[in-house]
Length: 563
Image (cartoon, rainbow, N blue to C red):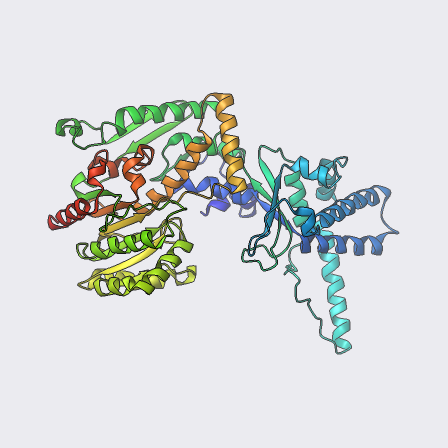
C-alpha cells in the first residue's frame, strides 16, 4: 500500500480502506515525515487564482437574479479574497526588493498564515465561515460544471464558424477535471490552521527561471507533521515503524509524535540506554578487548506503555566489512568537501586520484556517492579536461546515475552486467539522496566498495528548514525533552549517508569496503557516532594517523586479499 493512501484519510475513504484496530507495518519508515509534509502541503498560483475569479464572476453574472442574499454575501467575500491574492502576486519587483532576484533564482517571502491575511487586508474575514459555505454549497463542483458546459458551447460555436479555439502562449495548464475554486478552497483551509503547523511561502519567478516556479505562487509548507499522523494513530491498534535508519529514536519521535510527551520521553530514555549499553560497548577498536565484544547483545528491546523499541545489529560478522575514513589523498591534499572548498580544482583532482588508485585494488563493482547532482556534473567536467576520467575508464567501465527516472532500470542493468561478468568490473557514480541512494539493492559483486565523498548537509539557508529547526528548539526548550534544531540538521545529513552506505552488504555472506572520504569523518565524533553500529563495530573510533591514503590503501588491499 503506498504511503499516500495509508496516511491520507481522504485517500483511504476513496478506496474503501478501514484501518480500525489494524496492525500497521511501515517499512522504510524514515520517509513518513516527508510524505506527511507533501500530503499536507499545497499551492495556489496566479493563473489558478485568476481562473477561479473569472469563473466566479461569470457564474455570478449568469445567476445573479436567482441567488439568495446569503449566497451573494459569501460570493462577494470570496471575490474579495481572490482579488487581494491576485493583487499581491502581481506585485512588481520593486515592491519585493527585500528578496533575491538573481538569474534563475525566484524571489521568496515566508510568513505565518495570519501575517499573510494582514498583508492582504483580509484580517476581518471569517475564514471558517467561508470554508463552511464552500463545503455546504459545493461551489467548486458547481463552477466546474458551469464552466465546462459554457466552454463546450463556445467551442461548438467556434467550430461552426470555422474558427479553432486558441490558447495563450503563456497560460498555465489547468485541467478540465479539476476546479480552480477547489484549489482555492484547499489553500484557504491551510490558511485557517495554526502557525505552528505550517508557513506560507510566496514565490515570484526570475525573468529567466531555472527553477520549477514559472508563475507567482502561494505555497503552504507543513512544518509540524506530528498532528498529521494522529488520524492513523487514533484508528489503528498499533503501528510498527521499521527501517535501517530510524535512529536516533528521538528524531523520529519529534517528527511524528512531538505532541505526545509519553512517546517523546520513552524515545529519549531508549536512546540514552542504547548509547550507554549498546553503541559504546560495540564500538570495537583497540580500546575494546575481544571478550567485551563477545558480550555485546545481538539486539535490545525496550518496552514502555506508549512505545516499544527494538534495535539489532547487522547479520554479517565484523570481518565482512571494512570501514575506512580518508582525510588525505595520494598527493597529501586534504579532502575537504565543505561547500566553500569542494569545488576547487585541487580537491576535485585529489578525489579523482583516490578513485583511480582504488580501482586498482577493488574487484568487480565500485560505487561512488557524491553530495549533489551539481557537484557530480562539475567533477565529470573537470576529470574530462584533465584526462582522469579516461584513465578511470581503462581501469573499469564508467557509469553515471541517469537524470531521468525512466532510464534508471536500464542504467542499473548495464552497470550490473559490467560489474558482475567482466574481469575489470565497473565504476558507478551516484548522488546521496538521489535515485540510487535508497531502495536499490547493490548485493554481491555490484558493490564490493562504496566510497562516500563528503557530507550532504541540507541547505541551511532554506527558509523551511530554518523554521523547522527553530520550531524544534522551542519545543525542546519548553518540554525539556526532544531534539534540538542542530541535532535534527545533523541527523538529516547522516541519514542520507547511511542510506547510501546501506546499498551494499545485503545478506549474511556479502562483504564490502566502505570508504568515507572527507577529513570530518576522522575528526568529528558527532559524525562518527551518526554512523550505524554495525559499520563502526569492526573499526573502532577513527584515529587521524589511520585516515591517510597509504594506510587506507593497505587496509583495503588486505581486506580483499582475505576474501
